[in-house]
Image 1 (cartoon, rainbow, N blue to C red):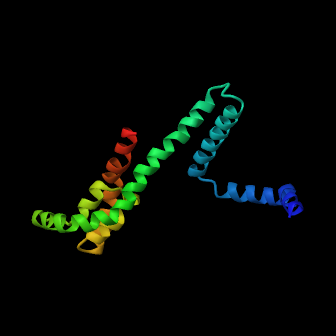
Image 2 (image 1 turned 135 degrees about the vertical axis):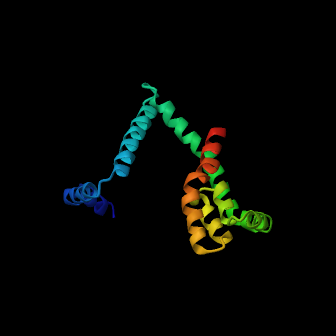
Length: 154
């Protein structure tokens, strides 16, 4: 088993093939992630060396920020189905009275990737309005409430 690991690590052909595959599908997203990885590795090495350059402290701050942010965002995602059950009897009559589709309310508070899209589809009068509300409105207003405010508070 150990010899198989050594053989795979020292197999230059597999490395160059995977590197070529990575380079052929290179996008700006991958370049940004790659740059972030380089600086993360620099921070980790500096932390191991005793924070001689000051990057290790920033490395620690990045890891310490992940907990509160993840808890705040995961809580919002988990609350989306409960919000639909609780708010549907209240919001649907109000939005219907105003002539708006109730799904607009969902993505006013939640980003589409934070549970706003499924909530909008549950509250929508039609699939087209649910898609519009869940995808268009949810990418503009929802992230402000779900991401920017929790980040600012933490």
